[in-house]
Length: 182
Image (cartoon, rainbow, N blue to C red):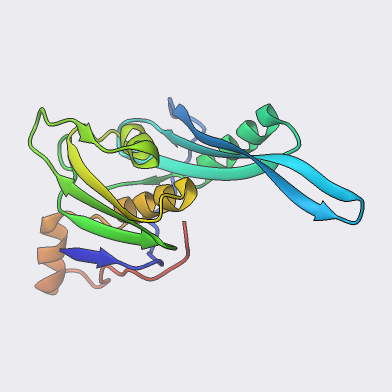
């Protein structure tokens, strides 16, 4: 089983302007900034977008009003889109990823199993187009960290043939697990 740390190399970004995207609102929270005159309230939105064909992105943003926060988070999600490696309607191999204190375990499943996941993990997997997968969320239940851990797990997936070719020396660039956060 491959364990992915907090930092992972992101696959190439996707241009979201010409895609038919589904947008899923994961959470909206009221947040406050304490200033000299009291508390300044605003809203934070977490949005996942995907086309169901392997492309997915996540956005988190705040604004003074809920619709504006959702719109800004959607724009951020479109900017952060990447293509995940899928195999038919599931993932190619088991993977575990960690972001903050949240840890997510994704396992491939047989056709007809469905998405056995909850909350943020389900939203990301539905947006990316996975139909059959088993998941387990470990550690904290913070929705933001769980969604980002799921994105790290999807970003770290590789096709078995690519790994075999790399091990035989047919590729010059090794699959790496270090880069910037999601």
